[in-house]
Length: 173
Image 1 (cartoon, helix red, strand yellow):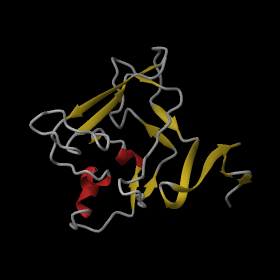
Image 2 (tube, rainbow, N blue to C red):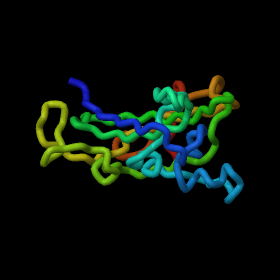
Image 3 (cartoon, one colour):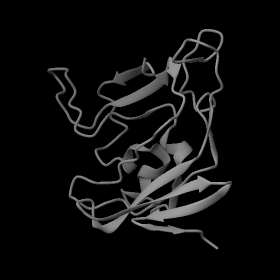
Image 4 (cartoon, rainbow, N blue to C red):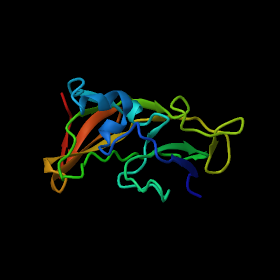
């Protein structure tokens, strides 16, 4: 059984705009020229309780029918053994967001209000489980656009971070 996720979409929320970064509240004001662009954003900020509805989501309300006017919340009813996150940095025009993404060695979904539970958080077997995940690896893309470039990864091996790049294994100094 896969993890069970509950998503709620709130329609016609005019606080947000189309670009994914502008939908992050405090980070969005730089798009309108109110402040300079942030140099980085944390993974925890991206996973906050309320986030934009998927890009291109169209409000089903016949009076609205706008794209990008909704927010969504996500909560896990059953937690996976391994949590895999995909942060899409591609933008609609084919470019990609170059703002650095910072992430910690661990991520607690309970503290981010990502866990719906009934007394105790549950795993896929409906057994009580922890809500903190340890970072084991990260995959990166480097290239001129979202459609061209090269993938490489950093993973933990024997307690150390190593870079996997095609047939090379590099231990950073």
